[in-house]
Image (cartoon, rainbow, N blue to C red; front, side, top):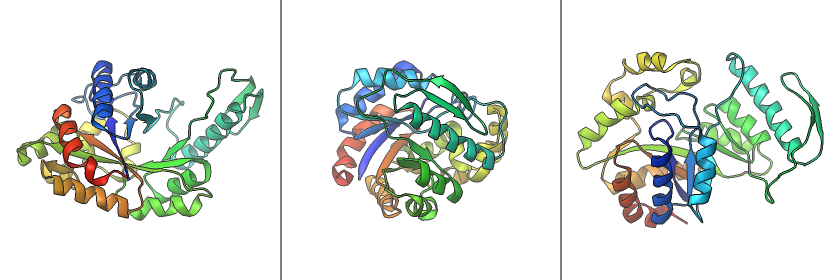
Length: 280
Protein backbone atom coordinates (compact mmCIF):
# COMPACT_ATOMS: atom_id res chain seq x y z
CA UNK A 1 0.00 0.00 0.00
CA UNK A 2 1.25 3.47 -0.95
CA UNK A 3 0.23 6.38 1.28
CA UNK A 4 0.03 9.89 -0.14
CA UNK A 5 -1.28 13.29 0.84
CA UNK A 6 -3.73 15.60 -0.93
CA UNK A 7 -2.74 19.19 -1.62
CA UNK A 8 -6.24 20.66 -1.62
CA UNK A 9 -6.14 23.72 -3.85
CA UNK A 10 -9.60 24.65 -2.58
CA UNK A 11 -8.19 25.34 0.89
CA UNK A 12 -4.65 26.66 0.40
CA UNK A 13 -2.86 29.28 -1.64
CA UNK A 14 0.26 28.44 -3.66
CA UNK A 15 2.84 29.03 -0.90
CA UNK A 16 0.91 26.93 1.61
CA UNK A 17 0.51 24.05 -0.83
CA UNK A 18 4.20 24.01 -1.71
CA UNK A 19 5.27 24.16 1.94
CA UNK A 20 2.97 21.22 2.72
CA UNK A 21 4.39 19.26 -0.21
CA UNK A 22 7.94 19.72 1.08
CA UNK A 23 6.97 18.63 4.59
CA UNK A 24 5.04 15.60 3.30
CA UNK A 25 8.14 14.43 1.47
CA UNK A 26 10.28 14.98 4.57
CA UNK A 27 7.83 12.90 6.62
CA UNK A 28 8.02 9.94 4.24
CA UNK A 29 4.80 10.07 2.22
CA UNK A 30 4.97 8.18 -1.08
CA UNK A 31 3.13 10.60 -3.33
CA UNK A 32 1.09 13.80 -3.53
CA UNK A 33 -2.27 14.42 -5.16
CA UNK A 34 -3.26 17.91 -6.31
CA UNK A 35 -6.86 18.95 -6.88
CA UNK A 36 -7.74 21.22 -9.79
CA UNK A 37 -10.90 23.35 -9.68
CA UNK A 38 -11.87 26.64 -11.28
CA UNK A 39 -13.89 27.39 -8.12
CA UNK A 40 -13.69 25.83 -4.64
CA UNK A 41 -16.66 23.76 -3.51
CA UNK A 42 -17.89 26.44 -1.10
CA UNK A 43 -17.09 30.13 -0.59
CA UNK A 44 -15.58 29.46 2.87
CA UNK A 45 -12.85 27.24 1.39
CA UNK A 46 -11.76 30.37 -0.39
CA UNK A 47 -8.94 29.28 -2.73
CA UNK A 48 -8.42 28.05 -6.28
CA UNK A 49 -4.85 28.56 -7.54
CA UNK A 50 -3.76 27.24 -10.94
CA UNK A 51 -2.84 23.68 -10.03
CA UNK A 52 -0.53 22.99 -12.98
CA UNK A 53 1.79 25.76 -11.84
CA UNK A 54 1.67 24.25 -8.34
CA UNK A 55 2.62 20.83 -9.71
CA UNK A 56 5.57 22.34 -11.59
CA UNK A 57 6.89 24.17 -8.54
CA UNK A 58 6.38 21.15 -6.28
CA UNK A 59 8.44 19.15 -8.76
CA UNK A 60 11.29 21.63 -8.30
CA UNK A 61 10.89 21.97 -4.54
CA UNK A 62 10.96 18.22 -3.85
CA UNK A 63 13.38 15.48 -4.92
CA UNK A 64 11.76 12.07 -4.43
CA UNK A 65 8.02 12.22 -4.00
CA UNK A 66 5.67 11.54 -6.93
CA UNK A 67 2.99 14.11 -7.82
CA UNK A 68 -0.24 13.62 -9.75
CA UNK A 69 -3.38 15.59 -10.51
CA UNK A 70 -6.35 14.01 -8.75
CA UNK A 71 -8.81 15.85 -10.98
CA UNK A 72 -8.48 18.14 -14.00
CA UNK A 73 -10.86 21.05 -14.49
CA UNK A 74 -12.54 20.70 -17.93
CA UNK A 75 -12.64 23.85 -20.05
CA UNK A 76 -15.65 23.37 -22.29
CA UNK A 77 -18.67 25.33 -23.42
CA UNK A 78 -21.65 24.46 -21.25
CA UNK A 79 -22.00 21.31 -19.16
CA UNK A 80 -23.41 18.43 -21.22
CA UNK A 81 -24.99 15.24 -19.93
CA UNK A 82 -22.67 12.74 -18.25
CA UNK A 83 -22.97 10.37 -21.23
CA UNK A 84 -21.68 13.09 -23.54
CA UNK A 85 -18.93 14.05 -21.09
CA UNK A 86 -17.66 10.47 -21.08
CA UNK A 87 -17.53 10.44 -24.87
CA UNK A 88 -15.68 13.76 -24.85
CA UNK A 89 -13.17 12.45 -22.32
CA UNK A 90 -12.50 9.35 -24.41
CA UNK A 91 -11.86 11.48 -27.48
CA UNK A 92 -9.63 13.88 -25.54
CA UNK A 93 -7.47 11.04 -24.19
CA UNK A 94 -7.10 9.66 -27.73
CA UNK A 95 -5.85 13.07 -28.91
CA UNK A 96 -3.38 13.34 -26.02
CA UNK A 97 -1.91 9.94 -26.80
CA UNK A 98 -1.54 10.82 -30.49
CA UNK A 99 0.20 14.09 -29.61
CA UNK A 100 2.55 12.19 -27.31
CA UNK A 101 3.91 10.30 -30.32
CA UNK A 102 5.72 13.49 -31.31
CA UNK A 103 4.27 13.27 -34.80
CA UNK A 104 2.07 15.78 -36.62
CA UNK A 105 -1.53 15.13 -35.63
CA UNK A 106 -4.67 15.78 -37.65
CA UNK A 107 -7.76 14.69 -35.78
CA UNK A 108 -11.42 15.24 -36.69
CA UNK A 109 -13.66 13.88 -33.99
CA UNK A 110 -17.25 14.33 -32.92
CA UNK A 111 -16.24 16.93 -30.33
CA UNK A 112 -12.68 18.09 -31.02
CA UNK A 113 -10.67 19.07 -34.08
CA UNK A 114 -6.87 19.15 -34.18
CA UNK A 115 -5.02 20.25 -37.28
CA UNK A 116 -1.28 20.03 -38.00
CA UNK A 117 -0.39 19.93 -34.29
CA UNK A 118 2.89 18.55 -33.02
CA UNK A 119 4.50 18.48 -29.60
CA UNK A 120 8.23 19.01 -29.93
CA UNK A 121 9.14 18.93 -26.24
CA UNK A 122 8.23 15.57 -24.72
CA UNK A 123 9.36 13.93 -21.47
CA UNK A 124 11.64 10.90 -21.66
CA UNK A 125 8.99 8.91 -19.82
CA UNK A 126 5.37 9.74 -20.66
CA UNK A 127 3.18 10.37 -17.61
CA UNK A 128 0.37 7.88 -16.96
CA UNK A 129 -3.17 9.09 -17.56
CA UNK A 130 -5.16 8.43 -14.37
CA UNK A 131 -8.92 8.58 -14.94
CA UNK A 132 -11.45 9.51 -12.26
CA UNK A 133 -14.78 7.76 -11.70
CA UNK A 134 -17.59 7.97 -9.16
CA UNK A 135 -19.82 5.31 -10.76
CA UNK A 136 -19.54 1.94 -12.55
CA UNK A 137 -19.92 3.30 -16.11
CA UNK A 138 -17.13 5.84 -15.67
CA UNK A 139 -15.03 3.17 -13.94
CA UNK A 140 -15.36 0.93 -17.01
CA UNK A 141 -14.27 3.86 -19.19
CA UNK A 142 -11.27 4.41 -16.92
CA UNK A 143 -10.32 0.77 -17.42
CA UNK A 144 -10.51 1.07 -21.20
CA UNK A 145 -8.68 4.36 -21.75
CA UNK A 146 -6.61 5.02 -18.62
CA UNK A 147 -3.30 3.92 -17.17
CA UNK A 148 -4.71 4.17 -13.66
CA UNK A 149 -7.86 4.98 -11.72
CA UNK A 150 -8.82 7.45 -8.98
CA UNK A 151 -12.00 7.80 -6.92
CA UNK A 152 -13.43 8.77 -3.56
CA UNK A 153 -15.83 5.79 -3.38
CA UNK A 154 -14.64 3.56 -0.49
CA UNK A 155 -15.86 0.22 -1.84
CA UNK A 156 -15.62 -2.36 -4.64
CA UNK A 157 -18.53 -0.60 -6.37
CA UNK A 158 -16.19 1.21 -8.76
CA UNK A 159 -12.95 -0.74 -8.33
CA UNK A 160 -14.35 -3.97 -9.75
CA UNK A 161 -15.75 -2.47 -12.99
CA UNK A 162 -12.40 -0.73 -13.54
CA UNK A 163 -10.48 -3.98 -13.07
CA UNK A 164 -12.77 -5.95 -15.39
CA UNK A 165 -12.48 -3.36 -18.16
CA UNK A 166 -8.71 -2.88 -17.92
CA UNK A 167 -6.33 -4.98 -19.99
CA UNK A 168 -3.42 -3.97 -17.77
CA UNK A 169 -4.57 -2.90 -14.31
CA UNK A 170 -2.74 0.23 -13.18
CA UNK A 171 -2.54 1.96 -9.80
CA UNK A 172 -5.87 2.52 -8.06
CA UNK A 173 -5.98 5.76 -6.06
CA UNK A 174 -8.60 6.75 -3.50
CA UNK A 175 -8.89 9.94 -1.47
CA UNK A 176 -9.56 9.51 2.25
CA UNK A 177 -10.77 12.67 3.97
CA UNK A 178 -9.97 13.03 7.67
CA UNK A 179 -10.13 15.73 10.33
CA UNK A 180 -7.29 15.50 12.83
CA UNK A 181 -7.43 16.84 16.37
CA UNK A 182 -7.49 15.96 20.04
CA UNK A 183 -11.13 17.05 20.39
CA UNK A 184 -13.29 14.67 18.33
CA UNK A 185 -16.41 16.85 18.38
CA UNK A 186 -14.44 19.93 17.30
CA UNK A 187 -12.86 17.88 14.51
CA UNK A 188 -16.30 16.78 13.32
CA UNK A 189 -17.59 20.34 13.36
CA UNK A 190 -14.57 21.39 11.30
CA UNK A 191 -15.67 18.97 8.56
CA UNK A 192 -19.13 20.52 8.53
CA UNK A 193 -17.68 24.03 8.34
CA UNK A 194 -14.75 23.46 5.98
CA UNK A 195 -15.46 20.35 3.90
CA UNK A 196 -19.24 19.71 3.87
CA UNK A 197 -18.93 18.21 0.38
CA UNK A 198 -17.90 15.01 2.19
CA UNK A 199 -21.62 14.57 2.84
CA UNK A 200 -22.69 14.59 -0.81
CA UNK A 201 -22.55 11.62 -3.14
CA UNK A 202 -23.87 10.55 -6.50
CA UNK A 203 -24.41 12.62 -9.61
CA UNK A 204 -25.27 15.84 -7.75
CA UNK A 205 -21.56 16.34 -7.03
CA UNK A 206 -20.83 16.84 -10.73
CA UNK A 207 -24.00 18.71 -11.72
CA UNK A 208 -24.22 21.78 -9.47
CA UNK A 209 -22.78 24.85 -11.19
CA UNK A 210 -21.62 27.36 -8.58
CA UNK A 211 -20.25 27.57 -5.05
CA UNK A 212 -23.52 29.14 -3.92
CA UNK A 213 -25.54 26.17 -5.24
CA UNK A 214 -23.23 23.82 -3.38
CA UNK A 215 -23.59 25.88 -0.22
CA UNK A 216 -27.37 25.58 -0.44
CA UNK A 217 -27.05 21.80 -0.72
CA UNK A 218 -24.55 21.59 2.14
CA UNK A 219 -26.61 23.75 4.50
CA UNK A 220 -29.25 21.00 4.68
CA UNK A 221 -26.75 18.43 5.96
CA UNK A 222 -26.11 17.65 9.63
CA UNK A 223 -22.71 17.14 11.22
CA UNK A 224 -23.38 13.41 11.41
CA UNK A 225 -24.28 13.21 7.73
CA UNK A 226 -21.19 15.12 6.68
CA UNK A 227 -18.80 13.09 8.85
CA UNK A 228 -20.18 9.66 7.93
CA UNK A 229 -17.10 7.82 6.69
CA UNK A 230 -14.71 10.63 7.72
CA UNK A 231 -12.22 9.73 10.44
CA UNK A 232 -12.22 12.49 13.06
CA UNK A 233 -9.88 12.83 16.04
CA UNK A 234 -6.49 11.34 16.86
CA UNK A 235 -7.13 7.63 17.38
CA UNK A 236 -4.55 5.94 15.14
CA UNK A 237 -6.46 2.65 15.17
CA UNK A 238 -9.47 4.31 13.52
CA UNK A 239 -7.29 5.71 10.74
CA UNK A 240 -5.57 2.37 10.19
CA UNK A 241 -8.89 0.54 10.14
CA UNK A 242 -10.23 2.82 7.41
CA UNK A 243 -7.04 2.49 5.34
CA UNK A 244 -7.27 -1.29 5.67
CA UNK A 245 -10.87 -1.23 4.39
CA UNK A 246 -9.75 0.73 1.33
CA UNK A 247 -6.97 -1.80 0.75
CA UNK A 248 -9.48 -4.65 0.96
CA UNK A 249 -11.69 -2.82 -1.56
CA UNK A 250 -8.81 -3.13 -4.01
CA UNK A 251 -7.14 0.26 -3.85
CA UNK A 252 -3.35 0.38 -4.04
CA UNK A 253 -2.80 4.07 -3.21
CA UNK A 254 -4.55 5.99 -0.40
CA UNK A 255 -4.35 9.78 -0.55
CA UNK A 256 -4.99 11.23 2.90
CA UNK A 257 -6.74 14.62 2.98
CA UNK A 258 -6.83 16.44 6.31
CA UNK A 259 -9.32 19.30 6.66
CA UNK A 260 -8.50 20.17 10.29
CA UNK A 261 -6.55 23.29 9.45
CA UNK A 262 -3.58 21.81 11.33
CA UNK A 263 -1.85 20.02 8.49
CA UNK A 264 1.57 20.19 10.12
CA UNK A 265 0.36 18.38 13.22
CA UNK A 266 -1.44 15.80 11.11
CA UNK A 267 1.63 15.10 8.96
CA UNK A 268 3.66 14.56 12.15
CA UNK A 269 0.98 12.20 13.49
CA UNK A 270 0.75 10.26 10.22
CA UNK A 271 4.52 9.87 9.95
CA UNK A 272 4.68 8.38 13.42
CA UNK A 273 1.44 6.38 13.67
CA UNK A 274 0.24 5.52 10.15
CA UNK A 275 3.03 5.29 7.60
CA UNK A 276 5.11 2.66 9.46
CA UNK A 277 2.03 0.41 9.73
CA UNK A 278 0.63 0.66 6.19
CA UNK A 279 3.40 1.42 3.70
CA UNK A 280 4.85 -1.39 1.59
